[in-house]
Amino acid sequence: MTRSSWHLERKMFLVKLNKNPVEGFSAGLIEDSDLYRWEVLIIGPPDTLYEGGVFKAHLTFPKDYPLRPPKMKFITDIWHPNVDKNGDVCISILHEPGEDKYGYEKPEERWLPIHTVETIMISVISMLADPNGDSPANVDAAKEWREDRHGAFKRKVARCVRKSQETAFE
Image (cartoon, rainbow, N blue to C red; front, side):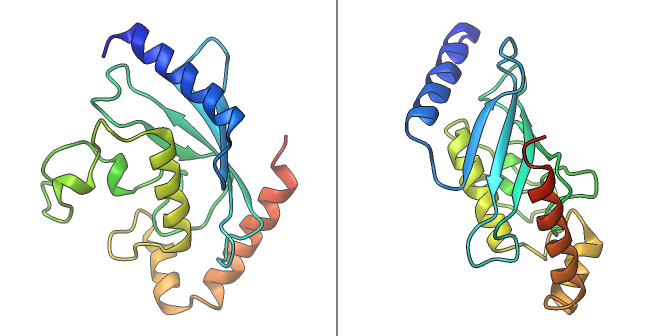
């Protein structure tokens, strides 16, 4: 895919997304002049500890997208086993394509050029609803999720949800 066709595809996707929003998130450019940096707002999924939260994140696309995955980083504080303490999201479809050198992920679970912002966001929303405690980016959150899900973990998530509501549209 040439750079100009990629730019056109991204612009068309944004127009489509604005005309027909997908439930659970919205997306747009951080700066109109930079198609490589997007801001997304993720609504905490219903019936989860994250319900009611409005979490801001950035997607940064590499120059050779879609051959390589974008990076995703939560800007809003979030306590989750698959989000490191700096906000970086760690899920399979955002990992570089190919074999996992640790043998944990199958190649088809990792990045494929057919993935879109929509499939990424659906995966992230699913991650919020069902954390993967076996492969954590935040070991402390994973430990709490496994050992004290309805105590300390729930309290920390509730604080993040409240803070996200207060800062959602700053």
